[in-house]
Amino acid sequence: MYLQSANKIYVIACECNAEGSEALTCDDGSGKCGCKENVVGDKCSQCEAEHFAFPTCDACMCNAEGSVDNSCDDNGKCSCNDHVEGEKCDKCVDGFVEFPACDKCAADYYGFPECQGILDAF
Image (cartoon, rainbow, N blue to C red; front, top):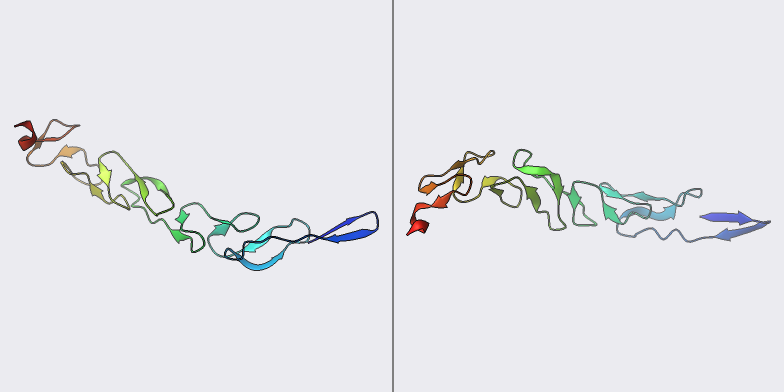
């Protein structure tokens, strides 16, 4: 990238992230680097929304019905709705049934919304 001031031209390093950018060059005007697929940021240093594990930036792939949204943490674990669990929010928590609602107690459980095990009462 170049910066011109009072008849002088300065060369400024782009500082593109080597793992996230297509090349180590950037736009002369904005200084923005060209990012690989699913990578964002002026220097290509982070995953775009709904992706994780920079620099590979894999899709979160959360279960749409069981998760709050399609975002996940840095390890790919999705945020689940109430009474839903699993890395991708794809099953009811023990004691609950009827995924994705998970709004009924399973056999041998009682007292929705807590759904306590019958054997837990003894």
